[in-house]
Image (cartoon, rainbow, N blue to C red):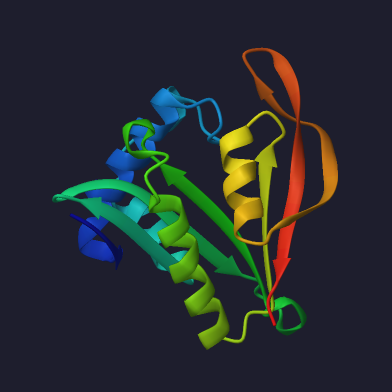
Length: 162
């Protein structure tokens, strides 16, 4: 059984573990595996800084997350930057859609007008998920990411909420 739930400070190790697994199995996450080292206080700090952070739990196993961080200044408090990651084995099972549905509920409740994210242009599954949930491509960040010595463009995507 799958459920989406808030991630809180007592989930620090679970949150770190899923991020580490994503770093290891995917070239689409920002960090390379050796860049992420467990530091309890740093992980707690990261969890505390998110305005919205939920995880996907499948039969008691933490398998993914979605975070959103609002702008700090008053003029951009209506905007939230989104990051999502789902362990490979659990992708294409509707988890991403459920995470984005929770995000949108939160955003509307908090008067967030704009959701935004970046995605490598070769991450076709993620782009399809984002478009399915109403995100559109606004622009291209040329040679924004270097993976295995190759520079990759990123799409800048957003969704404007009614």
